[in-house]
Image 1: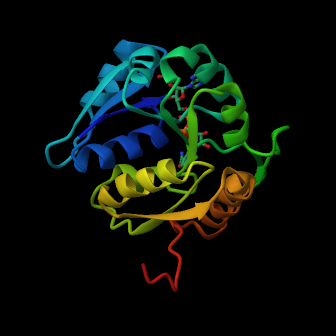
Image 2 (image 1 turned 90 degrees about the vertical axis):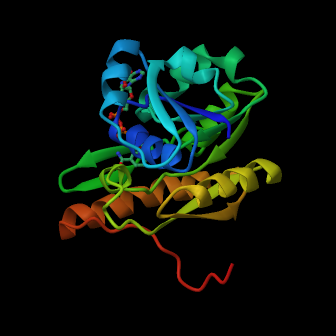
Amino acid sequence: MGTVGILGGTGPAGRGVAVRLASAGYSVVLGSRDGDRAATVAAGIAPRGQGTVRGATNEEAANCDLVVVATPWDSAVATVSALRTQLAGKTVISMVNALAREGRELVPLYPPRGSMAAQIAFALPASTIVGAFHHLPAAQMEDLDSGLNADVVIFADDDAARESVAGIVNEMPGLRGVVAGSLSLAGAIEAFTAVCISINIRHKAHSYVKLAGLTH
Ligand SMILES: NC(=O)c1ccc[n+]([C@@H]2O[C@H](COP(=O)([O-])OP(=O)(O)OC[C@H]3O[C@@H](n4cnc5c(N)ncnc54)[C@H](OP(=O)(O)O)[C@@H]3O)[C@@H](O)[C@H]2O)c1
């Protein structure tokens, strides 16, 4: 089992991914701008199984074998750019959505390169970028008893990297990895997350994506 670092891991999104990765046996490093804060947050996460979650700085998290970006969209590029050296040669998962709240809705923003995954890929030319976890509801992810049974749509230009991430997702309780295709799909998936969240706000629900008709 390798180590997984999460940049901005102290937020709801990072915590949700962390508890399910650790419950699959991974050693997770929750990264933060403040290592002490991350240690406090990590102490409150209770995975099941052999995995662990510890808090550290984003720099330490970036030294892990696999790294997830879980910061707000408007700080993602600056965060990864500062860690470009540590992230070189690694697979970096972006779960970042560029969204804005307008009344009762979340609406998608459109980054200049079409998606946050593409913005991150441009900032990290020596890393392999994979998109995943975009539309997962964080609270249900963090609660291992929530009954979550969700699909994770995965995309990347590198076939081996996206299959590898799908394998990891399939080990995480309550999740199925579904490889969709190349990084050019990122904008559509990031924007679709605005639809998912708006549905949940409007219907006061905790719905999630499960694709029908897939046989394998
Ligand atoms: N929430 C969800 O349900 C969900 C689901 C799927 C994907 N996502 C995506 O995952 C990302 C994180 O979502 P979230 O709800 O967890 O966000 P969040 O709580 O607003 O932020 C996550 C963490 O990012 C760090 N951070 C905040 N501002 C920063 C800055 N200016 N520079 C560097 N780091 C900063 C903070 O950690 P420290 O203060 O400890 O550094 C914070 O705890 C977003 O891009 C979101 O679109 C969210």
